[in-house]
Image 1 (cartoon, each protein chain N blue to C red):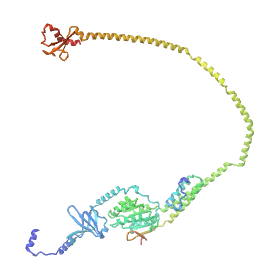
Image 2 (cartoon, rainbow over the protein chains, first blue to last red):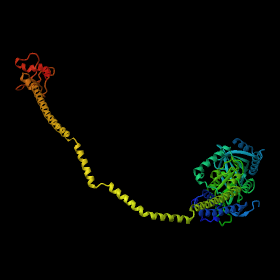
Image 3 (tube, rainbow over the protein chains, first blue to last red):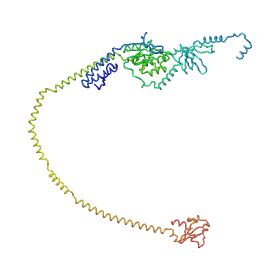
Image 4 (cartoon, each protein chain N blue to C red):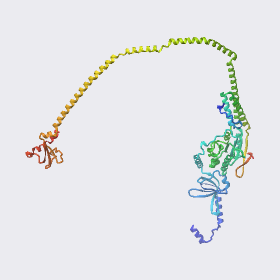
Length: 85
Length: 500
């Protein structure tokens, strides 16, 4: 799976959603082509499973959080309040 | 007027009422203010000045008149069009006087550009100028993040715009939104919008009071060209162009285009559309990841099945190892027993073939020599010798003939030369003199060729066969008999000429 650009060195936790999703899809395509040694395929599968978990977590974490910035006398941000506050 | 004042002076304080300066000033003020309490004045803006107090002073003028004007602080903040030098405007307000200075002026409540065309021209000129600076270049545009963590929104905190954006964000992909509240219209708006864009960019990447957004949306609802003017202001456009954080502009409706749209990284036709550009749909991503997970498991299962099948296939190919080894041992034994007799027979055969087939070198030489003699005998040498001797005879004969021809040609040339010599001798002028002719020449030695060329009394020289004598030309026709030979060649000159 080395030709599919998998970077086994990057910790999955540090990847952005987009990068994790892209890598997951590269792994899926590589496995579907059926190239490489079986050991590599198993390693790729395991990383794919981690990436999938990471993406799902990011999606589940998403919450709408709205804050209005409070400005001080000089027009600089000095904290936040509720939008309706 | 002079008469009138004279009359006044003469008549003294008659029945004409007398005002104090203040009284007359108040009267004028009253008249002016009641007559012009709500007017629209069209003119060109000149010297607009903002005082520290926030009041805006300017002059309106046309070809022949000027009108001082003031826009008090409150009204100035609400102006949708900020007056600039040379701008053609229609100002609405009232006239008033300033008695302390014997002046009158206009108090402006509202300013609009004189005609849509003027505003659009101003806009177009500004767009061209900023475009020429490269502010709108495609290379400056940044990609929007696929999934922003924090979105900064610069807009009014109240009203439909922020509601629309938050609603659509919630529907698609809920994220963390920071709203930087600003006025989106009026004089203060441009400074606030500029400060908001710059303020978001100034937030530190981490560890700050507020998280730094990875996407900005600058939004405002629909309105007239004047209402949207803030987003055509140069400082706002420059701030958007300079933003390090990717920026979506969403000003007005689909048909409205403001200059910030050229400078932003992406232009949304409406605030709702800006939210759609900002985030993907979470449900789509959930489905996509589910699909990817299915494909991942399926592909892995297939790989394992294929690998298992391959192992089984190879195991079949190996067969029973013990039987295989015994079989090979048997082949080896048989081969060993056969090896001795086979080798001897083979060597015998080879020796026989060698004896039969290879001739000795002497045999080869003898055979070759015989062949050579046959070839030499076959060559017809006599005919070549005959041809050679015939050729030699031909060459001798040709040589003799050539010599004779050359000497014959030489004799001919010699005879011809002798003939020419004879003709030459016969024709030389000395020979002619031998025959009694005389050559007549003038003083310069030039032959006198005709009687006409000789004048009476001209000295000439006569060349005879044996020498020269001087003579003088006389009248032609009757020379003394002694001189006849001298005259004769003269008369005969033409025939001399023909002779030569």
